[in-house]
Structure formats: structure tokens, C-alpha cells
Image 1 (cartoon, rainbow, N blue to C red):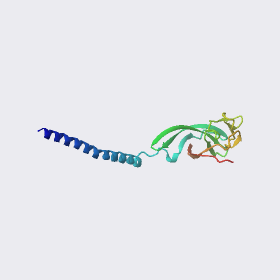
Image 2: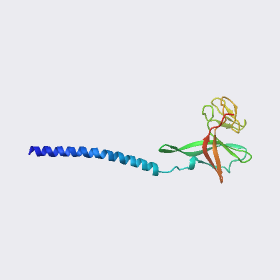
Image 3: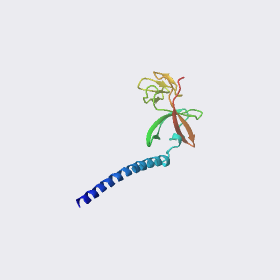
Image 4: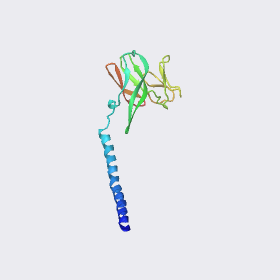
Length: 167
């Protein structure tokens, strides 16, 4: 009788181990299937082609420079996050809009517009840029980077950042 009890326990252990051996590949396969399904059928990007709404341009007067703050959706692999950013927007007399990155091309410091000098001035190392974004002084060796821009109605849309080329 003792032999029958040992035999049942051995069978139960063997069944448990065999069940675990068969269950592990199914769990791995299920996880991979769920990941691939989420990738293929998951949520689409909120903003089309990386364009961000930078606000109403009807309030901007010709010949003025203004800093605008906007939110951009950043997609990094699987992760999406909203990032607050800014741009310096220049509206010339022909009603053409140029939007500059808020970072100096020397070392990435934030610069500001100085109306009395009619220039963008970087307080870190003394670089200065004219209203077209060209270098007029300092250690910066290339113009300010620009955003792609488009206007739909009165809304300004900022696209990908384009690095300025050295002149």
C-alpha cells in the first residue's frame, strides 16, 4: 500500500513539472503576440507628421518679434509624451513668418530678443543674431535653427526643426 501512495505522489510531481514545461512557451508566445498586436494596432500619433499648433498669428504685427509657447507630442519608441517648448516668431512686412529655435547655436543657451538693438542676444557667451537669424557677433559660427512653418487660417503650425547651415 505504501508503494501505491509513492507512485501517486511521483505522478503528481511529474504532471506539475510537465505542465510548467508546456505553460512557459505559451506564456512567452502570448506576451510576444500581445506586444506585436499593440505595436501594429496601437494608438496612432496625436499630431500629423510632427506639426504642433503654436497659436493664433492674427495678433502679431508686421515687423515684430515674439516668443510663443506651445506643446509638442514627442514619440520615443513606445513612449509618447507632451513637451512644452517655445519658438521666436518673426513676422516681416511681407507677412512671411519665420520661427527660430529658442536655443543658441553655440552651446544651446536660451537667448532673448533685445528690441533696442534689434537683435537676438545670448547672455552665456555674447553671441548675437540679427532678425533673420544670422550671426552678427560672438562665438556662434552658424545661424539660428528654424522650424518649418505653415499657416492654416490664423493658426501657426510649427514642424520639424531644421539646422541652419554655415554661411
